[in-house]
Length: 298
Image (cartoon, rainbow, N blue to C red; front, side):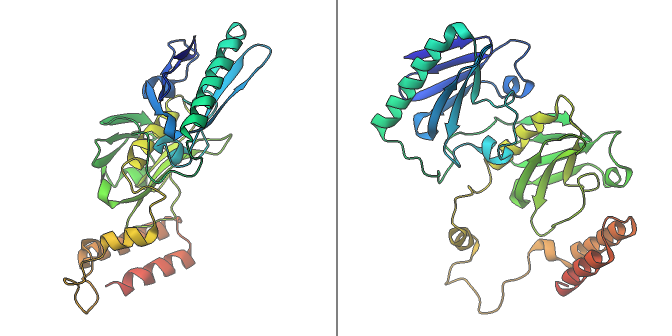
């Protein structure tokens, strides 16, 4: 058993798993406190390192690609303070930190944990139901539906569409981008059969983030959704095979258009495109191309 207890948190290694508990110190980030305790199996680790400094040191875990939906959803954009796989170490505990590193490294060697990309998530991601209020919306996720409720700061045209509810089955991808400098961030849900180039400020499937304290919590929503989407390592052919009908059931003709391609749905899409064009969000070329694509499906 190897354990290091700091104001920033406590890491405990029992030979098979690392238990990461965030500290209660006021300097601990809101994201780490909200995420809570993490149990990381040894098989999810690619490495561990300790960096010494004059005032403090830092323990860092490196997870295998594709092991954690949070890291997959955030794409390396979490700050050091918000990263749950880092721990600030005080100078009088440097020896303990080095001991933890040695124990984890020895276990990785003994178990011969591969460094290659994972084919499935080894961590479950944030628990649901989950609700976060930040930027121009409150986002709720219960494991099956994403709900976006706009607030008084939402752009008028976007708020006019009303509360948005998206079935998880209709989500093709989720993307989280933090605000950097003068550049706003966002949480965007890509909906199947309804791609958009609209900026997050106008996109009814996106939340615009301005860099305030609770903004990083939207990364937890992204991770919870990501954990329930097909793993990125899933072969494209396998994914297509799952969606394809059985050979005995497949008709010779092309399959019927999905519900999203119904006449009424396509008419609504045309109206939406027209509104985006009139408001200047879509250029003439973008509008013409999108309109033509919809007309071909009618």
